[in-house]
Image 1 (cartoon, rainbow, N blue to C red):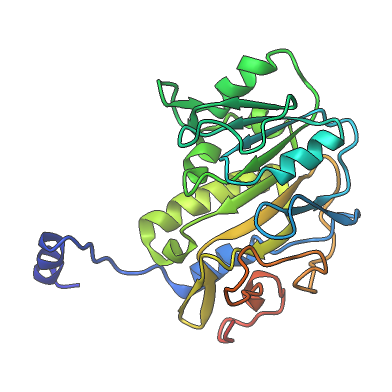
Image 2: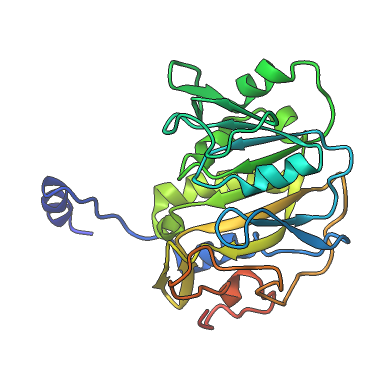
Length: 270
């Protein structure tokens, strides 16, 4: 790329850079294909936004960490009905919309350091459960900060989660070299200890198309600890019967073929 053009773009507030090759993006996408875990999936939370599909394996889990607080806490309320206490954290709000004794709130963002407005996932766990060694549940929707949080979380703590529900943001940047490298490192760390059992695009955020690939801007993933089960066959029926659109009145956004179909060919459109 002409350095003069890049300098002009930079002066105007834009950064021009060569894009990551399609095959590299496709390879990363395919690493996140959902696989059978040997257990049925259940829906916990609201029918729309705030509800997630997870393996029916909550027995003996006593605690959930849930950074990112929205206008609904149906997920945590339904966990409370199963005697699972939830710790919530978000500096942008003053508390959960439905206060309950089983919901313990901290007015903090979850990030990569500890200060007046942020705390790490490790510090959060240490605050409330310093001696606890049982399995945990993590439900995280923190608007793009998830990559840094996952990368900065100690492996020992990460492995303590039996199930992780994670909303991935800014996936349209998979073709940008810097963002691609960060996302790839994050996914590789997660997939060392977990495998994907469900994937659901957030239709509120829409999608982009590039080089025949369809990329949801935001994607809800459910990951299951490899200590609980070995990954089975790749799942090929999407959407799941329990899936629901996040936003009513917005065009449905089914999971594109490249995100779940093992035989997706490099030249095929998704």
